[in-house]
Image (cartoon, rainbow, N blue to C red; front, top):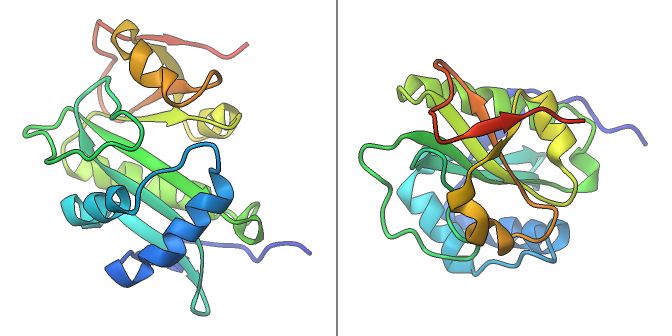
Length: 184
């Protein structure tokens, strides 16, 4: 069955009532990267504008957690942040997870485009993320490129051997400490 086409209008603000469904999707999509419920609740509390769910007729099929963060950095997996940096240097996509029923519908590119607009509206020049589960090719299609940031080696190790830190520039060039590599 072909998934129904999605637009940004299918995404809505996440609420605390959505967290059980969000956690179930996380467990299904990322079984090798478990995170405590407190992580999801904290991200929602710290930056609600970056937490959205794909809701189709009352069924949540996907979610995204994102927030302002330090440039060229990623939080360690399954760690509370405590607070967001002020000022932030970049916008971080913590997680984008879709159940199979939502894949191929355009939902993921729609929310990534909306997040880029949101980040630019906050005055942030870049977006960052850690690609896992072989998702780097999807992120490249969304304008991200792999970035070598030596200071991130130990944090990336917690995400698994195929983890890739990726950046998408929104307004300015890369900062000198990051080197973007093209995909082969």
